[in-house]
Length: 67
Image 1 (cartoon, rainbow, N blue to C red):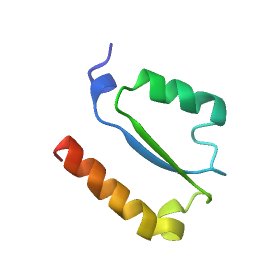
Image 2 (cartoon, rainbow, N blue to C red; image 1 turned 90 degrees about the vertical axis):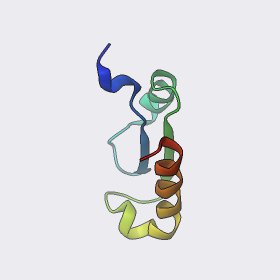
Image 3 (cartoon, rainbow, N blue to C red; image 1 turned 180 degrees about the vertical axis):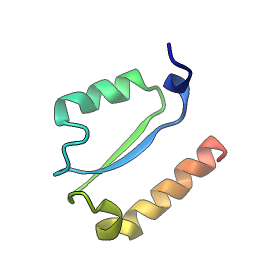
């Protein structure tokens, strides 16, 4: 198994962005223990569209993983 497989992961994606298609979401969460996945009703510009919601999620994640 690759060393990065156990690294902390947090994804904030737009529902309309096909980076992680719906069928792969559950597999991703199963395969990466402790991973977080947050979906927003947006496309490619999730941060521009939802910064007030995403920023605290990112800060909390970084606090939890000690970054």
